Length: 371
Image 1 (cartoon, rainbow, N blue to C red):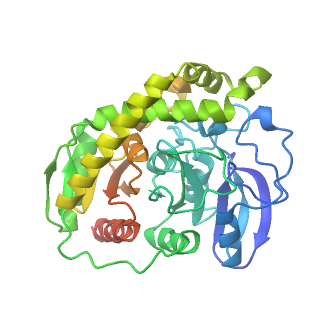
Image 2: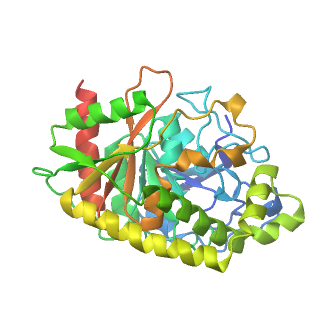
C-alpha cells in the first residue's frame, strides 16, 4: 500500500503521526505528489504545525502521498502512488489527503495531518471511514504549508478516534481549550441532496445523539459550492500554474489547471460576493442552531475502476466545499454502514467554536459506538 512517500523517524516517544506531503519537514523536499517537483530542494525549516508536534513529543513516521498538487478529490496519483483504501478497498481513498487518511485507517498511525481547501480532509476521512477536522480558517498555522497563499486552505487532523483528534488539536491550535458542555445544544439538519441510505444514516445518528434538532435550509448552498470552485481555481492556478509547462503534471490535474487558468477577475468578484452572502447565511443559521449537520458525501465514493478521469469527479465535494468558502469549522464522523460503502456525517459550527464542534462530535461518536 502506497502511503508514505518518505519514511521518517523524528521526534519523541509520544503518539505516532504522519504528515501530508504539502507540509514542510526540515531536510526533506515537499513534492506534493507531483513529478514536476521531484527535484525540489529540501525544506530549510519545518512547518509550524510540525514543530509543535515534535515539541510535544509526537513521533513523526513519514510524509504521506496525496492527490497531485492537492488538486483532486479521488486520491488517485499515477506518479506518487495511490494508497489502498484499507477499510473499503474497492473504493477510492479520497483526496487530496489520501495517504493521511489511509495511514490512519490502516493503523499505521493514530493521527495524521492533512490539508483541506475544498474538502481534502473530510472527503478522504469519509472515504476511508475515519474522523477528519477542517478547523476554522486561520485557527491553525499554515506557515510552511503549500500553497503559501490561500483564502480557503486549512491544516487539520485525521484520526482513528475523537480523543486522538482532540489531543492533536490541543497541540497544533494555540488556545484550543477544554471542551464545553453540550447540554442544550440544538442541531440544524441541513436539507441537501443525497442518496437515501446516506440521508437515513445521518438522520439516525442525530436521533441517537439525544440532542434536539430541526430542519434547516441554506438557500445559497449550491451557489457557494460553485463560488468555492472559482476561488480554488484562481488560487491554485496562481500557485501551481507554471508547472503545467514542464509537461510533468499528471493529465487529470493538468486538465483542471488549464481550465482554472480561464478564471476571470469578474468570475472572482462574483464568487467573493457569494462568499460574503453565504457566510452571513451560515452565521445566521448557527445563531439558531449552534451545530449544523449534513452528510459529508452525497453518494458512495467512486469505485477505483470507475475513477480513471479524476477531473470529472470534483462533484464529490458538493457538500463540503461551501464551508471552505465560508471558513467555518467542519468535521467528518464515520457512521455504521451495511451498504458496503462508507457513510459519514458532517458537523459544522460557528467560527472559532472548534471546541464545541469536537465536543458534539465526540458525543455522537460515543452514542454510535454504544449501539
